Amino acid sequence: MLGVVALALVADFALFPPLQARWVVPSGPEGVPTITDLQFSWTSDQFRHDLYEWSGVVCGEPGSGDPDCTWRGAPDAPDPAPIPDGPAGFKRLTLLLDYALPLLYGAFALGLLTRLWDLAGRNRRWLALAAGAAAAAPLCDMTENTLHLWLLRGVDTWDQAAAADYPGGLVTAASVCASIKYGLLAVLIAFGLAGAVRWARVRRAG
Image (cartoon, rainbow, N blue to C red; front, side, top):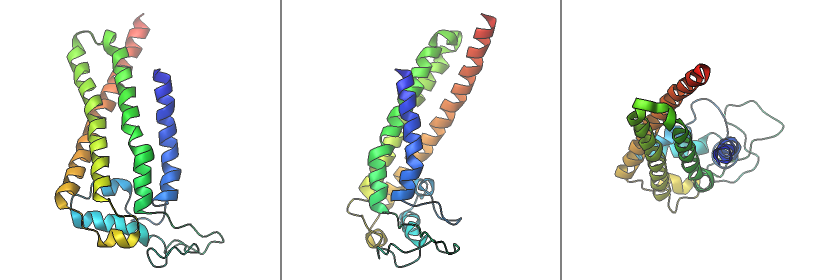
């Protein structure tokens, strides 16, 4: 079962970059905000700026739908880059992949921790703490996703993204959730590395 979860997790990670490039914002010039930048926008003005900047990485008027636009500042290319779907694409990506991702990495982490239980010995209380982190990180992640979807309700085009009102409290709450999520993931990675070392020692001794 753990192997199936691991394969699904790898598939989710593998699908994310190409779908992000197609639906949200392809890899363009340096300085273009990423989805991670949007997660840590903290204020409504910064959230609007980061979101709308995704329309600025292509030449032409935002929302024009011109299929012949190319990257701003990029050399002329025979095959112009397509305009991503922007806010609508971000919501689609969140619904299809970003809700599944926390469930998968949470299930994978908990599965690994249960296998390490017998090896933990007197350190089981630390393992229980790690299990708490494995449960809390996906919860924070999905809460952050829900807040982003709520902020972008009714926002599907670049023009709507520029004109929309983004409540500062919700933007800050989403950034807080993102901060807690990444902190808990760092804890899980540390426990995972420690568990791998412990497993290697036990196997070597056996």
